[in-house]
Length: 64
Image (tube, rainbow, N blue to C red; front, side):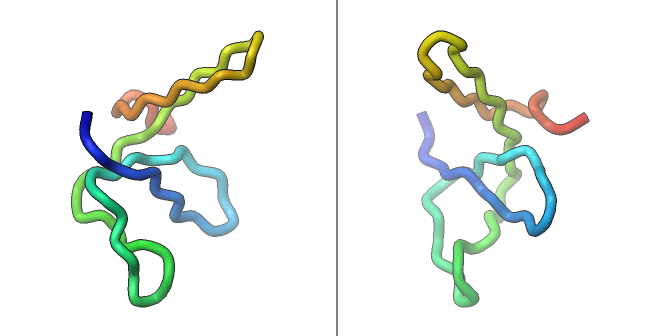
């Protein structure tokens, strides 16, 4: 497993969440600095019985 965080960097739109490697670093302007590495789209699966969620970061989850 590799440490990372979910990036949310949109304004006025709905986009696919993305995963960034490493620990988030605070930005001078607020929030976190934009990651230098590639961002990986996140797909989420939900159990229809209990609502449990599982998230996976894989390129095929990008909006098509």
